[in-house]
Image (cartoon, rainbow, N blue to C red):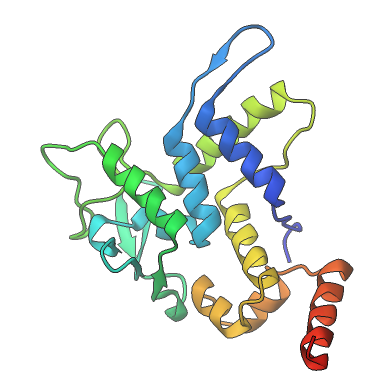
Length: 228
């Protein structure tokens, strides 16, 4: 297993989202402007748990705002030669329909509203309408988001005494899975949401229970069994 991935706490998550969305003033008077797009993307990643390549591949056709459903059936990649391409999801279990929470719905609304309209929409292997495009009118890739998250975190940690841990799209996915497990969702449901082919991955890698988490569940079970 690779280097241990640590999920963000609720306080850390809210702090970085608020700071990026609102901006802040450095000690030298330099103003770090608000960046709602990065904050919105970070919110979506932490509240959907998508692989970043799945997130980059989302198009307007994949998002059913009326019925609040999200179709995941492909991912966006780019070769070393700079060629954009659409690939199947990482696993056969990767194809799934995700429910859209109110918070996720609002995030999608913001992205769609701020999405720049191009005279010629970029098309990759027959797909168009990608959610986030760069200055050249091409869809954002995993590398784009990783660099944006790294930049935002670096700015924050150079200013504030209490530094935040590394935040990457993968850590957002990890945080989502951990939080859903702690909230009590069933392992099979969580496996479906994450698109894992092996439930051992869901149980053994992404979720990290501590004594307090287990004790809380045991006490709640005791209360239900005793009829309290």
